Length: 255
Image (cartoon, rainbow, N blue to C red):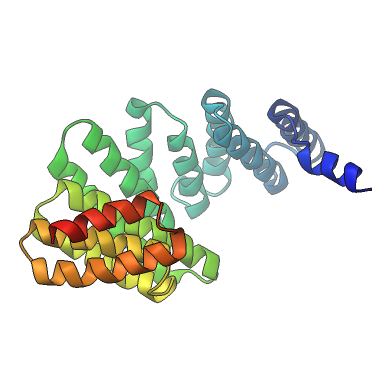
């Protein structure tokens, strides 16, 4: 019995086999209910997301092109679900095709979708060397992440959004002027303390990042206070050998 369980635990489904199953489910739903039925569209989304997560961007793009086309006919080009699917399409599109799609998705009334789109637009601008443009988009992303956290119902969704807010704030702090970077990290820290708790490792990481930016801005006293607390939390939650602990220790040493 133990051997049999070990074999089952060790077995991992072949991605190609799973992709075939998702494809079969999509085709079966299309035959039974029609291409525009909600069940068929959801099956297509499932297939597209699976392909996207498993590195098959070209296949996922074809699926989401079909999904968006049906969305636009069924619920309209500006419907929240259409814009969410446009974001999924943008995520698997080459940069030149992705930017106009992300711009459309950024108009979504769903804060989480708009935040994701603004963050992606910021990343595209950053890669193009347009740091002021990138900072503007990242700022909008953080605004919408903050609203998304407030609007989210599930704790897990709040936590995911809080962590994303911290990541966006960290990038913004690296490419913007110090006051804007400090303000962004302070906002993210408030969100993470509220949602994740003050002693969560992600909260401590944002606090450490804030301490580093404050140190660069010659606010040494506040930097030392924040980094000492963050370092203690990271050591307790992630272990003394974790890279985040090493970075935090370096900030403290320079404080």
